[in-house]
Structures are given as structure tokens and as C-alpha cells.
Length: 179
Image (cartoon, rainbow, N blue to C red):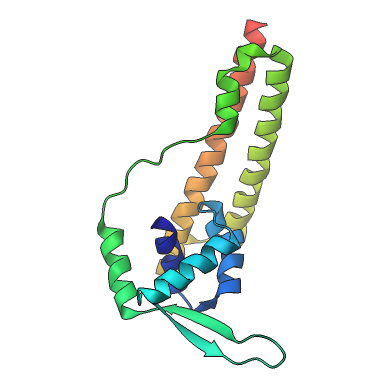
């Protein structure tokens, strides 16, 4: 049911259409929670059936009617209850680490290239996060309350990417020493 909470959190600031919500999952929320457009639309239907969200139907000429979703009072209470519950440590499913674990089966040069490539990907993501930080969070003390908590998730993303870069650097040094 966690996708449902990700949708409720995304709708809490402002009502959105399914399309706008899916775009948000491709952007800001997508940095830490992925969902396909199909999954989002399926979950919106469930949330509406459970009365956790309500939809305002807007007629459009020449196109299907548009639904704008917002969190209901019941949905807000449900979300607040969930926010107060403890969270488990996320399980890790990382294909790259599985390949590294079995790296002894292929030449070390191939592993080195894989690590360098992975480092480059994390460097690019880090630069994206740092640009967001520069552009939107130059003064965290002046941020509205909602933005402060978004900033906390951004900082987690920055630390996550920096941790990967540090690990890649360490791994490259170790593999070079083993050669």
C-alpha cells in the first residue's frame, strides 16, 4: 500500500490530474519513489473507491473529461496515522552489486569498467541533485515548512549519491591493488 501513501503525499499540497501526478512521479517524487503511469492510475481508482481521495470532473471539449484528484478528510486522517507509524529499513535489491559480488567470474578489467561507468551515473545524478539544491534551496531558513521537508529528502539523495561515488573510488583502488 506504500504507493497509495506516495500518491496521497503528492496530492496533499495541491489537487492534480492523473497526468500531472504521473509527471510528478517522473520528476521530484521519482527521485525516491518510482511508479509507472499505469500503476498510478490503478492506485488512484482504488484510493477513490476507499474514499481517501475525491475527484472533481472537468468537462473538456473534443477530449475526454479530466479528473482532478484531491485528498479527502478521511484520506488526510489516514495519511497522518501512517506518518506516525515507524518505518522498516528498506531492503536492498541491487543488480549492480549482485554483478560485483560475482565479479571474480569475469576479467578484472571488465569489473573496473563497470565500476567506472556506475560511478559516472552516480556523479551525474549527484550533479542533478546539487543543481536542485542551488536553484531551490539557497536559504533553507527562509523555506516554507513543506519545502524544508522536501529539502531533507534532497539531502538524503545527495548523501546517497556521494556514498556511491566514494564506494566506487574505494572499489577501483582495491581492484587495482589486486591486479
